[in-house]
Image (cartoon, rainbow, N blue to C red):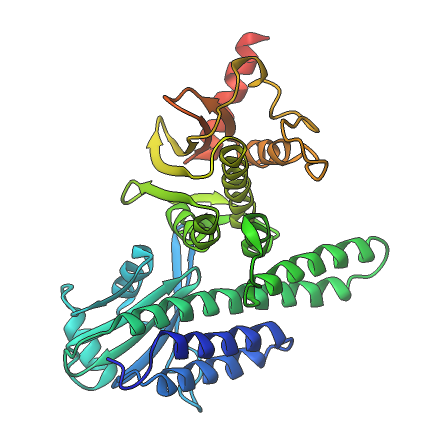
Length: 386
């Protein structure tokens, strides 16, 4: 699908986009970045007959969508038809090249594009879908797929950064006491977002990679696609882990329900567990393996993080989640990581615990799919025990 671009050229284009996102500080910066994305498609030689950017806002009981044509004079408008196909693509959490085979999709696209669409190249990100449409089903290269994955990450970073900037502007207008503390919190979130968008420096390592990719915190819980969160985190951590000769794999059950959560906090837990497994493996061996499993069990989303390190002795399993407890020799480790993760799990009415496994250690995060029901059950059990 590309005329002349390759992987290295596309990386340079994506680097420029990440820098544009990092530098923009005003609301109109969004349209500058969108225009640059359209230019990137052209510079990379991606052939297309139509392009659309869809924003998805999925709340319990409602789903709102907007569409932008990515043209110089384009603007956002409500998506009043075809929502089911955009939602289906968004929930797939994938980058793919396909034919419009879904029932009714061909007719909808013909109306949207004013032509018959035979091929779609699309990528999903936390807040929506980017798609280009072709009249002819010509071949799609690995470079095109890689470019679209990168564009999805850029768009994800753009809209998280916009949220942070909006929160910062609101915080700066708050009267009275407490302004400095709230502003600092928002600034910390923005620093996290900008670090995530910067091109990684050479030799940053797993710990730096973990910090760079943590999502900025949000002020309220929302419906989170935990499967997408795990896929995104594993994808971004894989290269840094492979540099330390550690393989990371993920076995994710299909069609898992969403959970109401702080996405940034859940990613913080996930990154901390991966970091702990990495450190444990490096204590005893030069190479290793980390396996993540995501499934449902007894009304909960269950994330298991298992490694082939030295394991956790049964006599200290009850202590590892306490503040300042650490088995790591380095003075750089405060022993607060698992304690903070436990607090995040409790805030989501879930729990964090160690489970037996054949080799190494397995730490499990359980999150109730229906938190109010889980909280009511917990209170009932506590009342019975009292």
